[in-house]
Image (cartoon, rainbow, N blue to C red; front, side, top):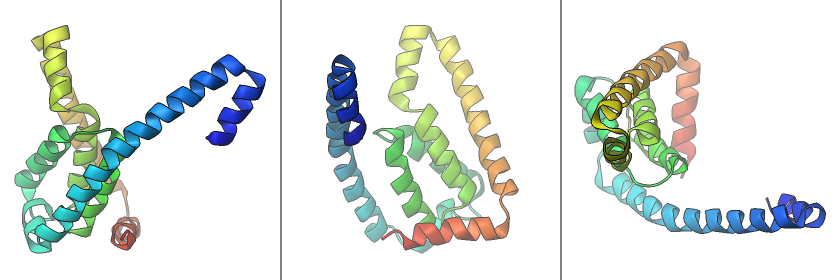
Length: 165
């Protein structure tokens, strides 16, 4: 990014300086968001036993796992890139792949503050329709994605999550 910013400054100074300001702002945002998330992930990794995670979000979790995945994603704070370390810890602890996909989908589209803002700015009817479509779409995509992956691909995803220490 630094190289691109330098090139922009050389050839397009106005755009380049704006790009540097935006890059700096984004870097500070990441530095403000990621450390607390990594601390929480460390605590989750230590405090929540694998058996507990498997029970509530693993293969046999059913509706409870789906609801927890939606809750974790919707209640989460921070940008979408912060969801991926959370997903890795959930996978490490034995969460069902589709539940992790649901959590990521919820993180990106059903954040509680966003829903409240939509209700106040665009109306409750719009918010409810969008939320219903998002919830259904997330579930369909998560299940379809899990079904479309073969066992080797699923195992590879779990192994990559396990190797992230």
